[in-house]
Structure formats: structure tokens, C-alpha cells
Image (cartoon, rainbow, N blue to C red; front, top):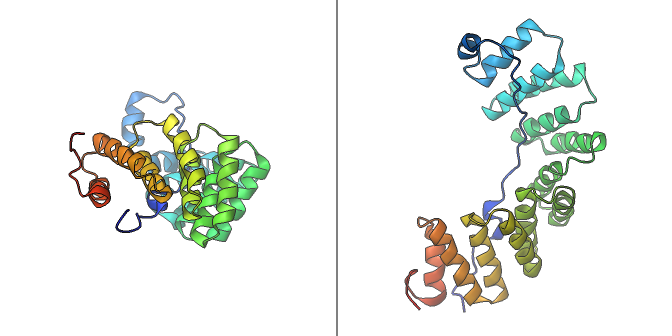
Length: 242
């Protein structure tokens, strides 16, 4: 029997932050070298030339969000939404910026508006689910993550976060199934193997847990948690032969 409960399955829940693809408009190589040295410089320059266009304001806001300049991001994306309020990706951008400011309700409003405008944005459900996780509403998070994997079955974060939310609820069988689906998408991800091992531990399947911890160490030999958990389970060195 394990000596203590393993760490929570939420260890690797991360926020999905959406960014826009930067389009190249055929400028000369010299201009790209000078003006495009970073996203903020690029889109600031575009806005100087075309201040009434919405997309450059949004893209500058995304660049600000990436740099942690959240107040500046919100201001720029607000301009984009004022110019073109019906563009769903602008609402996603605003939701991301608000989320970075811990304005959870505002972020949720914009994510829901993005989904209203484009129901095919399955990945946005992950962002909503993460808001519910932060608010402690795990059931609502599971609902959103389930929508994400239904709408975007190839989106890894949806499966990982759904599995982690199941783990938080003690629904270990469901967690195992969701982590296996995530593993099918990215079999060489050591974090998925680690969390699958934790789920197996919760079920009392310590042999299966050990196998997954070993796979974790094979993919990431520096993972001290996986090493300690094997030793905790069996009092053995992680790489014994058997």
C-alpha cells in the first residue's frame, strides 16, 4: 500500500492561451529585418500606417498578452472590438488578456461570446473549464472540458484537463480513460504518463502505476517525483531489473 496519497492530478493543468498567426504581407526583407524585430514593434508600425483597422490592434494586444503587458493588451483589443465587435477571435484574445489579470468573469463573458459567434471553437471550452477550476467548480469544468474534446478531439489540452478534473473529483476510472486518449495524441509526453500513474495509484493498481512511472523516467530521467513515487510504493530503486 502507498505510504501517502499521491500528488493531485491537477499538477499539469495549464491555461490554454490562444494566439493569432502573424501574416506576412510581402514587405521587403530589409523592412522585415528592421521593423519586424518583435511582434509589438511589427503591429505598432502597422497601426501607425492603418489606425482604423481592427486586426492590427488585436494582434498588438495578443503580443502584449504574450509579454505580460495585460493592461496594454486589454486596451488594444478593446479598440479592435470597437472597430469590429463581431469577430470571435477578438473575443478570445480579450478573454485571454482578462484571464491574465484574474478578471475571471470578464474572461468568461468574452469566451462565451466567441463560442456564440463560432460554435466550432472547441478549444475555447478549455479556457472556460480552467476558469471553473480556479473558482472551485469542478463539475462545471468537466462539462466544459467534455465539450472541448467532443468539438476538437485532437486537442491535447482538452483531454489532459478533462482527465485532471476527473482526478480532482475522485473519478479515477474516467481519469484513466481520458489520460489514455491524451497519450494516443502524444505518447512521448512524460507528464501524461506521470498523471496516468497517479490515477492508477488511486485505483490501487500499483503495478500499472509503477510501469507508468518508469515510462515517465525513461522519457524524463530528471523527474524526481516519479523516482520518489516508485521508491515510496515499493522501497526500490527506480531502475531495478525484474
